Image (spheres, rainbow, N blue to C red):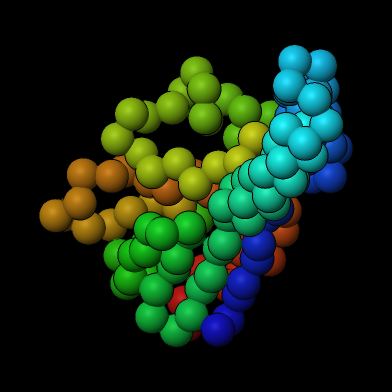
Length: 144
């Protein structure tokens, strides 16, 4: 493994989601009582844990391929990669987005990398991947 990064949901966002879930628990408590509220609290807490785990974006580069979440591509098909600032990522994922591009993005991670794809069989022009360490990520994407 040459590079590995896990982009997790920030605590403020998890707290906000939990606050919304707790408002549901309070509604259940008001309508159905203590036992139903306790059960719904346990379920909502478990749901928050599942959301936190499933929303993480895992980026890995080994000697053969790049993996972003469940997507993967051999390194030999990658072209130039460019580290992007938060403003460049914002523009590229909205106004200048190519519908055929692969987007491995999380809105809570502001910087990213654009990776050109050089595969005649693949119609995907580029991958846009959000990362917290764009320069380091580009360095490890270089020739092995």
